[in-house]
Picture 1 (cartoon, rainbow, N blue to C red):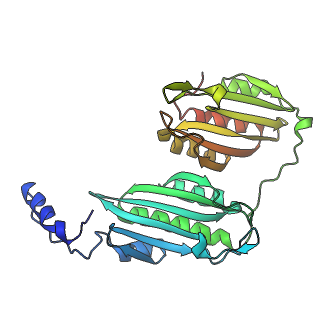
Picture 2: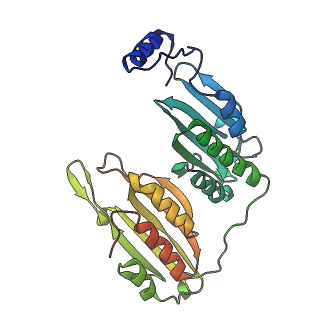
Picture 3: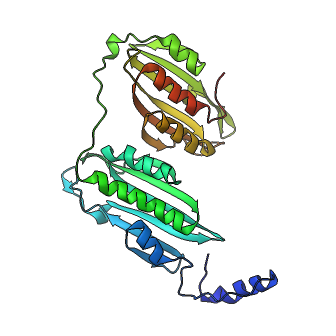
Length: 304
């Protein structure tokens, strides 16, 4: 990362000691090709000289959102952004995407398919109409590749912002569930128990908080509830995973057609750090179970 003028001499000295020809770096330069970033992302940006960060922003001026009757404007938190910073020979990007709930799945697929990580998905408001979600992204790599990936995310937001997207609808009444739970258990390799019209499967995990082990009974678990028929079922639940397992689980669930509802933490100060992911899926029972199994296989807690 390029530093301010007062450390330019030090950087040049390091290059000489390493046997490389000293490179002249402008103290006014962020060490990033800002014109390239703007072109590939399709968004205008500003450079923070103090932190060496170039940030592009896309205000969601296309949205008409009210929170408890108050009309929101982009400056009140309705602006998508991505910030680029050089670190050694690579570039880091972090960002926050403002999405209607109908846009979440499409934009998440664009991010994951472009090589970016999705690190959080949650709300920032209560009583907002229409409902707005915020998806945080990140990545490390080549400047042009990251900027192009962010550009695809911004494009996905633009392409889906003009009209409401198709929502998955299933006329399923848990009180009339007829699916065969044995098929779910055979795929997941965990017991499946009836619970008020649905069938639940649970996979516990373990963490430590303040020197005390916490596990399944304390809510450190992956669970899924199935309802409906073998041909058409719904599954919802919560996935508990280690920080390094999140991206693999995300990709496995999306490959199986399961929508991601939220990504966040449930605890503070636990070891190891546990991420939680809430999901929702509609489809044949076996297909849903296999998608969950594929996600479980991306973790160290996979049963069977």
